[in-house]
Length: 86
Image 1 (cartoon, rainbow, N blue to C red):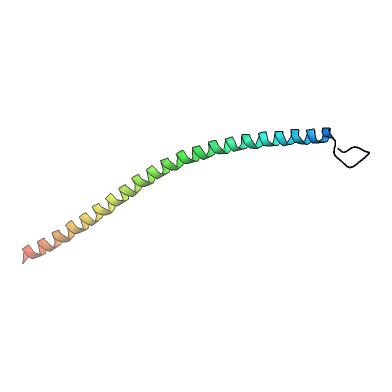
Image 2 (cartoon, rainbow, N blue to C red):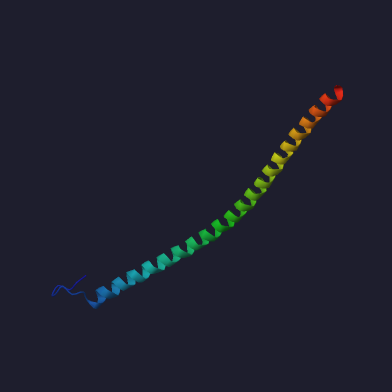
């Protein structure tokens, strides 16, 4: 890369390095674009997951509410039947 007469790089050497750096920057720019698309996709998937999670949470609350209502109804039924039998 350097000339034989001295240890200084030539203009050609510098030009070659700049070309390689330019190529590397182009590759990195492409990679950043790909990562940006991946982040957007992930963000959309995360929103879908959040919606599903909210639905499951609401359904779980309804099931718990139903269970407590059934327990309360059964307890009242037992109490009322035992009071009326006396």
